[in-house]
Length: 554
Image (cartoon, rainbow, N blue to C red; front, side):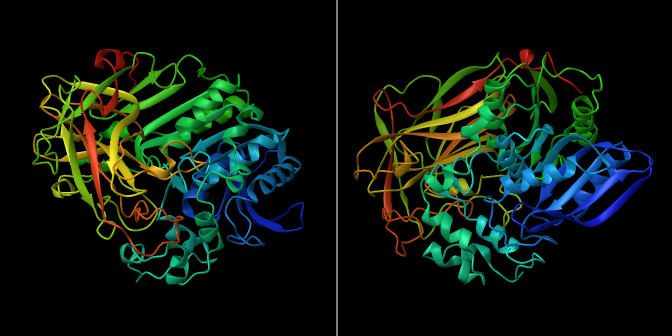
């Protein structure tokens, strides 16, 4: 189908600011259902225009708009706060254009998913459905804070979006810059004046600043069918899981969830270094999304999603599976307990994972120096934060405790949420604890599956932090999000415990001062307790492989 393209169409917002959009639409069609994407990453970018052309060629009008203060649009860009009203005004405009039949859907990934969720509680009468890709959840559940810990790569993200041309000096050594203190001054250190950076650090707890942006707390106002899409190595994976689960429990509108073996830029690769998830790792995502829009915007008869609305890729088995709910009903939660003779430091130590509670109370300890934080394997910047990387070298550091099973005598399949419970003490008044789940191959490759972090002051509440008493044992629950993976026979299940994930997260300086203000650090001694009184453990969502593959797709 031939298409027409109108570029730089002005859309007037309710406060008079003009935002600019490109409109792709099929020729020879009087009016069409309309799909809207709003982005801070320039509407002319290829990844947007390719999809716009695809949907226009399949009978949709497609609108790509630069958000306020970005690309061609007027105004000042300050993340998130203008998106609800601007999104509503844009939908009103799109529904009343001559080329639109008034039936609207939205689509977009990452920030463009946020723009959808922020607008949705306003209940626009013409909005019929959403396709939410790689969506973060509410702002204090993943970004800019996770477990109460600040995500440092947001500095490079804000710096890139601070200029219309997205130009950030290529010569910056981000890892070195992110070690400077205080954090509040780092925007100036990279040549920018970033109000949002300083505001986010000032609001270091779940307060009114974040509450006014919350959409998860207003899910009951959203009565829309939503297609949620993410990847196991999407660094905001938890958003799609939270959003899907909340919508599935608060609305009768059908919800659909798709999770592939993908990074944040979904469905772009199924190979990460030596890890190849096979030819089935990539799908016809445009086609799958078109079927969804055809169902809701064109009233097409397609396969209902109510029978098995959850589709996910099982890594290790490298096949797709389907389920009626998330997590799948066949999953049973199985605990593996941390155990050692007191020398679990490094992968050469004596740390073990056992199916039963260790018979005696013991502890392992390590020294955490914020000036030399435990590394997180990733490239500098913000585009992708980690994948199925090899942590075998990191595990040679003395500030990493390593607990492993014996080589498995049969395959072990897991699918669902991952949680690590630690009974831990610190010599500091505030500190962090991290946990990571890995699959260790016989050749020694320690493949990251997922991880999490918690800041001690936020162990009980994100809105009411409280410092800890030195050397007192506290219980910490670390959310490591989720995965679907098969540990093959001969492989080992492994948990790493440390106190930093640099440069993904701000290393805790252990001072107890407000986040972003302190300049000096305190070295802390950390103790991880395990045994009958202090049963530190990981909870694995175990499922029989045969059960998992009953509904496997190609």
